[in-house]
Length: 83
Length: 302
Image 1 (cartoon, rainbow over the protein chains, first blue to last red):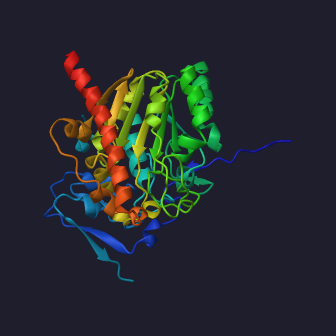
Image 2 (spheres, rainbow over the protein chains, first blue to last red):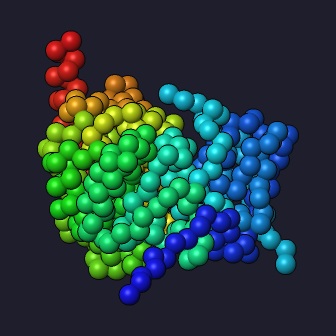
Image 3 (cartoon, helix red, strand yellow):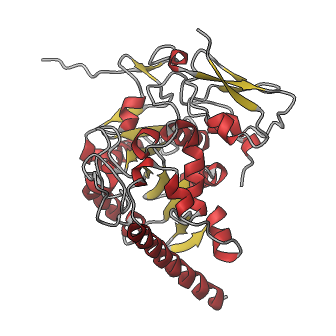
């Protein structure tokens, strides 16, 4: 009798496009940003990308608002999604 | 201490996990894996972390992960460490990533055995002070007065101090961390990676649905826990206890913030009476008195 072990492979979007869970979306005001990168490191999903300024991947952002709460200069605002 | 700006940019947690929004596990694990690097094998018992990986045939963890039975995480890690030694791959670090249920209660027998044998792995307990995955039941780590579905009038017992139980095993490295003081967490992970033998790190992980607070406040609550003294950041290298980061400042110059600041934000402490709050205060004061004594002893020796 042969047994197979269930093996999973690393994939982005294991749970689908989690951006659809979002009610509020974070919007970054680049003029206020001081590039401390706290939003980048505190983001539970890792959807904030380090570019010249932080950029949010809205395809996967769940809209928890940790980034907006932790931003020391309040450069991130949570805006209601329009659908 | 490494500045946040200089943390490695590689991500080992892939976007689109099954975690709740605002989950502290992925915050902690992202940073931990940044510190440990890709030569890491995760051993995950039954816990939220097993769910966060999402569904077969996909996984959101970018490092090899072994999912194992609840009570077996430390034994499985011992086996992985032994196999790696036989294969001559000793640059790979086996890391147990377990919740507090799998550490304080169900996994403690395997944990104690592996630590006593001096097995070579890191044991990380992310402590959300309850069985979150099965629907918020009380665990040995649930603090006094907290509501859970099995202690719906508030827990009547004080939580145990697992850090001190582990300290009784005389292992080379023990540390506590918080997701709010993330550079401290990164530092401790880096340090643990370089040490041989059993290493134990415990991370406080405030759980939004379980602790009943808004999902945007995960990091804020973790910070308040340290600033009020309810959670202490320390590390013990070869048995020598040293407070770190903000807790070290509390010892010397800063005043502890009133505990109400921390309790008020959490729905699980909504039904506390004044008597309960005084009991929690007394417990924290006693804990800090102990640390003060250790600290003073050290000052006198120098």
